[in-house]
Length: 107
Image 1 (cartoon, rainbow, N blue to C red):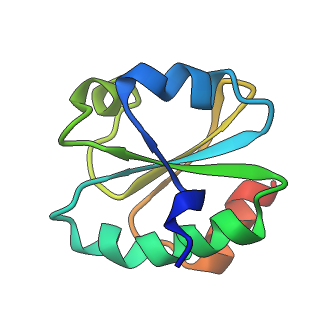
Image 2 (image 1 turned 120 degrees about the vertical axis):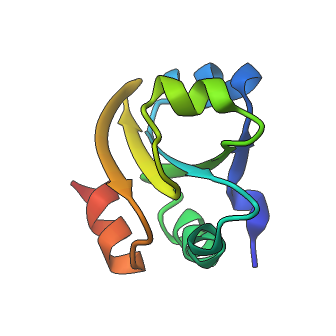
């Protein structure tokens, strides 16, 4: 698995990696204790490899970054938020298939 393709975000690098990104950014709000989050991780790693040209795949651990989670209204995890040009353009709550995520990022 190519986990190095998925960027771990903190409050310190969120703006630079997401809000100032030239390409779309998919942010996975997750936690280590979350079962569906663990199921989603390998799907996101595959997408990070396959869709590297069009989207950057990132993760935010909600336990470590509660301010970011509340700023973006994350109530349950996993929550995936798609950003384009620094703006939220789409949101997916819960476990999603690879096909659903591909649709989400290709819109």
